[in-house]
Image 1 (tube, rainbow, N blue to C red):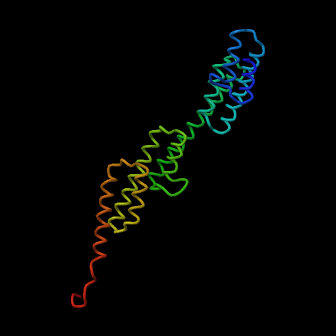
Image 2 (tube, rainbow, N blue to C red):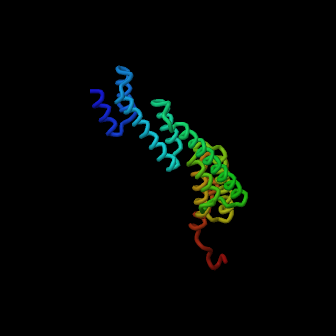
Length: 212
């Protein structure tokens, strides 16, 4: 019964977990440590996991690859390809770290150049790309906060020029990047006051010929 269940789980691609093929094969080996069928089943599962790790490497999904490697180490520590899989993981992590550093340096350079938003090489795009790969990256988060601060400065200039449409767009961009930015609330208040002044001016009747 265990063998049938294990084969069915294997055929269904259900390798891990309490009702997975590996657990069922392991239960067979507890009852019969030399069971060749169970041993072969675990080896086959490890092979499938290795293929999944390779596919994850190709897709750049290093956390998935790492999880599959640890699964292999747990179920078959002597799996022949395990050392090379771990070495490949280390190499790809080093390469990913180098790419992140490259994008951080470029994003910080774009900040200094005033290229904040708007294209694939903007500071915002570069920092967001880093966060997609490393969500906890403090430099990328700080970079986006600096982008938001720059947008607030631009919004304040638009308010000074009585351009509420441009100011509103810039402040919405800033709020999306850093909603708790200290200067954001003040700029939003100034924008509201500008709109109120413009509405009052629009409602005021034009001067008569006598007044002119």
